[in-house]
Length: 304
Image 1 (cartoon, rainbow, N blue to C red):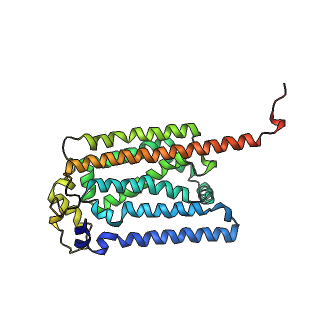
Image 2: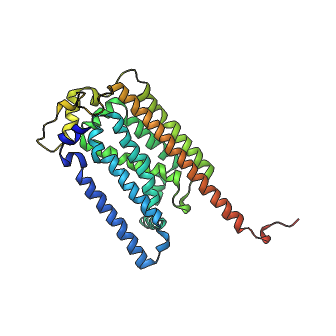
């Protein structure tokens, strides 16, 4: 991995433009919280835990869309899959949990006043969200689609944003961060999580059990050089010695083993994250049950 640090520039390795964007979003987040506290006195509605969640979400998004992982992910598919995990299975749920409930309430009120709430409700339907994310994720890993997107920075960026939005819709129904907007019962939310795990399995199985390496991005030096050229500043020569050479990162893995590792990594990490999410839903469920039991009085008990 040392050759990675010595061969590429700071801009190629650390994606400073993304850092600037994340800092700006974080500043806006902090300003909104302070403004709300000052004018509407909702200090208790934005906890320290939520702020930590939001910060972790921003860091995970940077790891998925920037950082040295972005460059290394064009050389090693397992690292690219780690990026996918960070962006869509770690960053998105943390960001949703990091936003205070009043943000969702104000946004829902604004959409209602604009008359577009029915459209939003249609596109955020649980089944549509379920199929949209898993469909986009699976389609992304079809070899022709993957290689085409990797060689087109504009289309790749558009697809990334679309996948991020689809992930947010999917996670919304699993986490249910706004009680008044719940569209699934707790039991159905657990079933929804299991359905997500099932639907993502075919894409992982395709990657793991393919008899050969499927992606030209990692096997064809011409395609790889074209992909890498978009990661580097204009005029920078693509170091072909980094492609399956002795100085290549993780050179001890051949392309098929790397591909299998990528599929296994995605499946395991997805199972771990969804397992944690099921625990989160159970905790919410038990808390609501205790609140309902605590609110029952003598007068609530029917007479015989």
